[in-house]
Length: 173
Image (cartoon, rainbow, N blue to C red):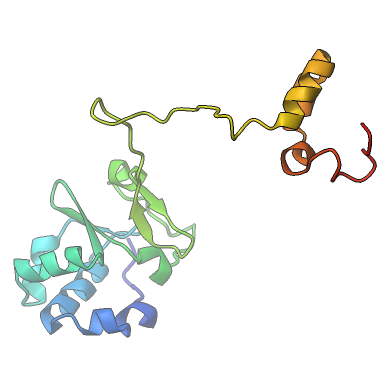
């Protein structure tokens, strides 16, 4: 684990961060200082003590989505990858691989919880239905004419938008 950490002014100078109480801001910075190379920190109580903060400040950081909480008294700094880039030869993987695998990295390099929802028995499953409106008359006529080309006729993008009279070169087809 590195001894030097970076903080980004994109985070610390933002109005949302500056509107936090000073003790919550100090707690965030102490959590960043004690985080591992992937942004995970298991020294939450030590950081609260060092920052002269309270559990309420920790809850504020969680509610404002500056940190993500896991079981086992482990937190993750949400914007860690935005602030810290560690050389591959110095990188030490986190011991919290299970928690890391439950996260996704957004395009702006912020961690977010993976949202892979599986429907349970109380939810309706999506249904694929073809109604009269979704079946194009032109594709039905071509299917009747030539059964061997029925798949091509129904998936041809020009058939779903135009009538035969509107397609250039198909007059009188």
